[in-house]
Image (cartoon, rainbow, N blue to C red; front, top):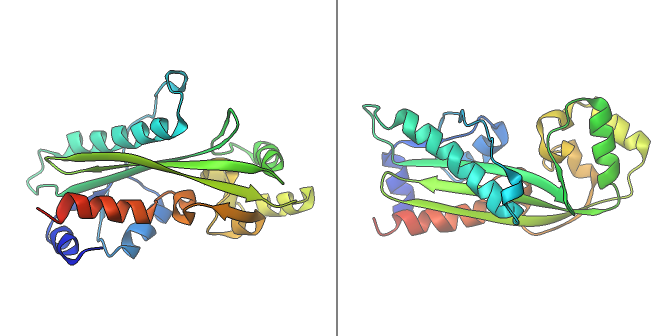
Length: 205
């Protein structure tokens, strides 16, 4: 990240509109000390009106950020930047969210086994004057994993707070044969694109 961008962010109030520990860690990797304010947006967005999954998660990220911005804009300490993101796992026309229980996690992971799926992450970066919205997509190919392996992974407890029922950065990485695209998009925060857009926002400010 450009030095001028880092200096600007270091002097201001940066908010991450997410309670995700993974996203928090990734933002810290960029050297950004963000305040955590999870969005209260209920994500009640009609998917049927979208023909592009990327645009859908991009809008979810945007509405998450707007909810936090509207809630905090009257605070005495001004906001410099709010960062929001949303991630979706898809295969064909099917969307895989967070599994609700063990049977659903098993079914989900069994369907993904030995097949390729696509992970979309939408991002919104908002300052008081400017808003940037974008998304990235990455192809992920699961290996030929057995029901015994899937059951063991579910017993770890890792699948239940993650879209698609797996975490690429944890034990779920053992299920993956290859990744075609940005690894961090699968984690839920595409660092390269975020850095590029932050430089656009702040390098000339």
